[in-house]
Image (cartoon, rainbow, N blue to C red; front, side, top):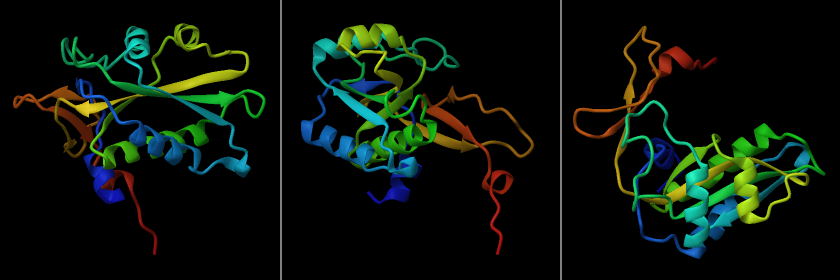
Length: 194
């Protein structure tokens, strides 16, 4: 899968097949993250991949999912939870915040996952102290910025063009049962000069 196709295919998925993710795939995602662009090459981010079922079961209840969707669609149901997570941490000795670096690394993880047929959902609504306690992370040394849930998809999702003049970006479940994600039309958000 080329990068453009991965970008087009990627959607946040909220129902996963229980098949485990191979370690080699997680290693490639971690490499994609650590090699992502970083301001002044400071490299303030650290990454923790979690694929042990015991830890995944402990992390899952400490995450919040798709508040706009009705139950049972918004949160993975029993037996359809993520089979791995990657935490994006900011090393506090290097930088207190690093949102641009986090964005570059997170998208690199997600696109590498997508290229291997692995679905993702980037989560910021998480119980940071609880996750830190579960994994033994020192929150004085490392800020947990966000977490990316991973697994093989057990649902489909697609973008739909927002009607011209609409500002309704709320995602929803379509009549066909597919997860729909409205996106603004290119002409309303992009310009090419030259």
